[in-house]
Image (cartoon, rainbow, N blue to C red; front, side, top):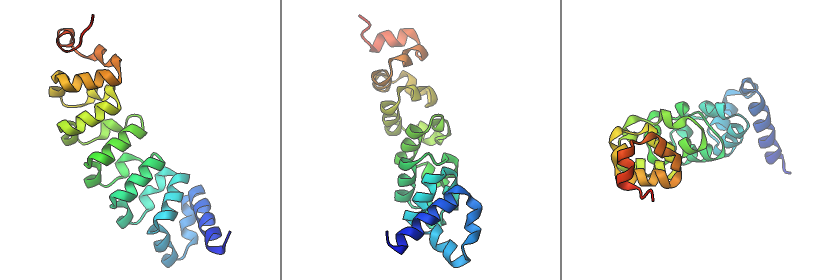
Length: 166
């Protein structure tokens, strides 16, 4: 292992172990670490709560946020608001962490394309989307195909009209 790789591993280990170890870096190095995608992904893997220490440039970079989400469960609330409204990011966050779908912005829960993707990923998300989709045959069928237990949350007369119960 060369010296640079050793330094990267040491930085990730120290900061991932205790966020106050950022103080061990001088200000110039601290800025470099917080703006280095590879180092910050390693640090976030050690402790997802440290996402908030990434530079603003990284926090606002969709690619970086997706990497951080897919590698670990960073808190959805820590993602910048404009990226919380992004279909891809909201869906990844919701499927990675139980309960995260509750924090998906209402405007996405009212968006037909997003709702279709969401109920394909987890049929129970139908419980949290706009009411109009709970009576949409196509979406209810998608939710049912993913998780038949969703029928416990749908009015019986509507179920009979869209799903062959025989």
